[in-house]
Length: 241
Image (cartoon, rainbow, N blue to C red):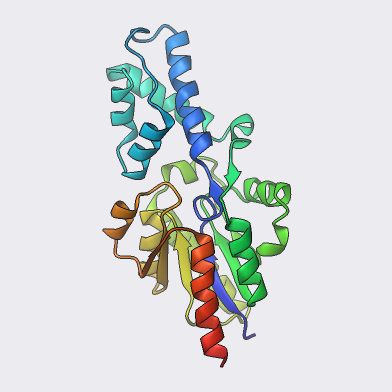
């Protein structure tokens, strides 16, 4: 089989989770206040811009909670609420398709590049989103995690394990994995690709800032999947000449 294959994260390159994460944060604060924990007058919600900037620069959730007016055991209770809420079905509806992600996937399809998703999301969540946005055609294979909280905690060892499994399975199926990329928006994606010998593409449209991602030395630092697809299309075209 001569088709090119890339491995790609789901949240970040394809899905914008910022509204869901912010809604979860706001709801967590509201529930802490409603339960009478802490000083209601001290609890204050950060703006979405502030919240997302902190998330992109890897500010710990505990610090974000502190800056929102929580202290001590209130922070522990808040973090437990967020972990419980973030994958609730009603909040998953906040997930949105990244701008130009559809166009990026279409470019890859047109130039014969197979997209294999490697994600810490449960596969059923991924398939539901793809069906909702009519993107089933864009994905050749999917490797996810059964635990619903794995994507939120985003541990690099989990992503390395998933990517290792995905690579081995694709090789067994006979697919060409030369010049293969791992595309993602977090340090876990970059570390996974580097550990397993792949070129890495860090996109800055997700949950990590350009400055933070650059410190992990990805092969490419690009704004989004569409830009990555254009660059890969150029490489595929040159190889086929």
